[in-house]
Length: 467
Ligand SMILES: *Cc1c(COP(=O)(O)O)cnc(C)c1O
Image (cartoon, rainbow, N blue to C red; front, side, top):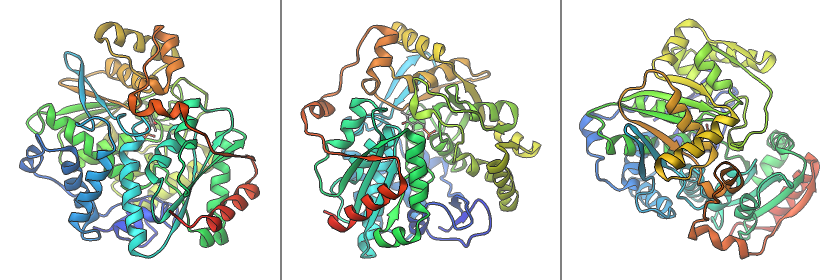
């Protein structure tokens, strides 16, 4: 399997290069040259299979012959053994035609674990084969850092440095990062906000000498391995509800659009998906794009669902490329213009292609809180604010027929204050995470200064040979 850039100007690469290199050299994102497809019988055969077995089958279609099948199967088994539920992604019914898929049973209680647990094993394995090491630098507004630390702690060929905005994440979120005692993990509280952390990450990644010296890499959601890992639960949940013999719709709480795009990939692979509802909070660039045909950057505002406070959804470029009939030059033109003007007028043919699958719904803060309350009243389930955005999207999207699966992206105990403010009930921390409260934290404080962070990363990489 070869991978091409959405901007059409970079040479094609294999799976391993695509997942280790982040952006393509022409600034585009990698996508497979052709979409692998599964027959109806192959999809039907997923029924009753363990989650890791379905993951192995789907991953193998994208990896090609670059990683041995047995090795891949071992990695999938190990990655999903870290989940505390034996179904990995269990389904719960919340309405006659409504279901939630709980993606939050991984070590950091958020759906990013599903992809990160696998990505860490894939990349560390490949580095070992190539006798290389790398240093991951991660900027987090809360959830990604915890998932990345949980996935990379103790890996043999990888060090990880996580930056978070000092005082602006919850104690639970901080403890998921700072209580890891492995020598290959370092955490930095940056005296600034998330945008400062992200700007520092960008500056560091552009520093060729640092990149060379410490093998600097990122784990953001443009990594195609994360997308593939996220396709798997579309298959397992749809098959549990009767696919491929009937079609299923999904409602996806969205920010960077990695999760929503993974649903599109599953559809292209042959899974009968009817609609994908892209549900956003008031940072609704995506919902507006699907409803109005214009992709227009807004001003980011803080909401109760902070993991979705994003106004430029990286993975939208992949969908644009597909819907613009894989025209790399057109995609390059549109996104270069977007960087300048913050606007893309989606051409009519591409917009029509998007509308075949996608529906956008923007959910206000009040509606999010009311949805947490009504879901508790109607079903007895406490849901987190991100999931609530998805449930509201399902309820309000027009024209849905048949079963709808809402992707539940975080455990309510990760956002206890918001849930308690809406319902008066404080969600209980699961047993697997409760021990964090008593553990010693380890982190350094640094100014929001790229040079200071770069020096820190260099010293850490020199001082700490990976585990
Ligand atoms: C990252 C995240 C999302 C958004 O997913 P995207 O793939 O960025 O669209 C939603 N909910 C939670 C809890 C998240 O951590």
